[in-house]
Image (tube, rainbow, N blue to C red; front, side, top):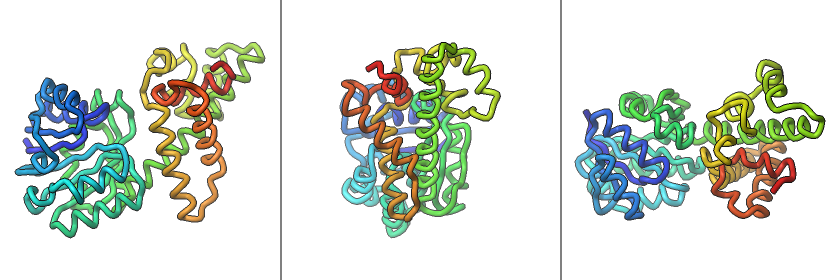
Length: 297
């Protein structure tokens, strides 16, 4: 079993680190929120006083923080490379911009460390149930070393290419998911006005050409798929503010790459408008945009 340091023990990081404990790994963790540290201790994670302490005498250091700014702050300003042993594998599971991911790889390489950018898909449910998908960017050596550890937190591991390609994959995936979600919401809104039941539309479209994961796996209306946030008053799940962040990253990347993504831009603008106009929308699951589409907010 491995010795693991974990920085960032929030809604995603805490259950991920807890699953590593359940797999028999020795895990110590740090978070700037004392409440998160208290919950971590209850999950069998050893509390430490700093990121540098989390990086000391471990084989793997996993970070799960909000943005690229925080990832770079950990890599540059927390002292992790002063305490880590040469050859430690640094895994950033955060969803951040591609440029920051590549910079993090460069910092790790200069310090003599292996590194992966390894954002995840699956939301809090996937984190709790260890069914996440990891999209990994970095060397084949780093990916091979990480496989067993990541397998304790996820169900599907994909090596997407060199540094930053995990993040590139994640933002493309989430842009596509958001676009599909708006399509599903508009379809259900139209069906309601035409007098067609949710179940009838679902039964047909889920086996027809209009199908998507947004419909068959993450249905934005209650009933057809009982496990979705729509059946829990849109409790996340994947919060609207996090999807908005990922759409912003996709738009920034598309502009830098010179690629037109008009549907992604529309999804970004509509989700931003929803958050601006509806109090509490940021903390709801992003599929709650269904109510916005049907004008019931």
